[in-house]
Length: 405
Image 1 (cartoon, rainbow, N blue to C red):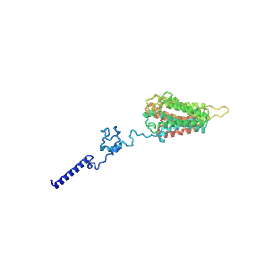
Image 2: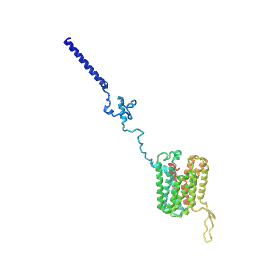
Image 3: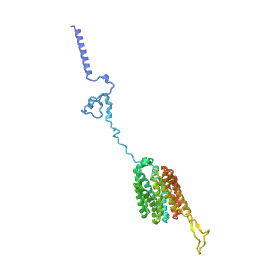
Image 4: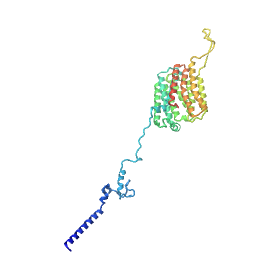
């Protein structure tokens, strides 16, 4: 073999060896042409700590051991170690109790009905023979606080029932939290007792059973037969509170307190069915009771006038009957009371639907103002009677905006 042939054979063997070596190297690693532009898999050092158990959130759900991750599983890794907890583990934000707006509290406390409260203490002072003074004002403040406490406590105790029958009320609608209403009732009661204590020991002695009757009525007694009598007793005690605070004799206030209590008994009995209606006998009985109260307040139209004695001058005019002194104001107030309470009650007797029954209750509440004024006029206090009667237009005006029931 020539030298040129040997050189050609050597070159051929060298080329074959080089090609074989490159093929062997390419089989030992991924091809760079196919991996170019693709994210590199995680380093082997980060995958080595895996044990036989697959951690939660493994990249490949078909590989329980996690030993053969695929390149497409790499983007899902950040969701496994995400620090954001899921919706189930996120704690709900603390909800602050609803304190309500001033308008919500006006509706809860039924502020238009407060115009019926001052007349109790004023009438109590009048029938006890005392002019209103500083202690009378303290008694009025105590009555207002205890009355508002009863309103807040009433809605707190009836919140489950109102959720069905009156869902628009501040508590069932969620505008005011029940705890806030209960706290307001407790604070107002304490303030009312403190004001009564400032008015004197006799006033505080009357205010304690008054507050107790308010809480007992709202917390359970109003749901049985004792409800109307307890509410009547509370209203009667409110008038006696004015007499005791003014320094008068409490015994002199008993007849007027009984008249106010009879009216309250009748109205409270009607109010127990104001959301259902359907009762004709109860409004009819209330109409009879309030008619009796109005008759008791009406003065005699005339008084007996006798001829003068021998030593005195005979009065002008023929012997007989003359108008009673001060009877005109008293008669007008008694007539105003009868008109305010009788008309809506008569409508409820004819049609005992819930709207007419509620209107009868509202009329009975507003009728307390002319009743208190008539009691003051009967006691010989016309100025007090007129001041009390002046509250009626205000109560009627504000009752158009906020219901008193």
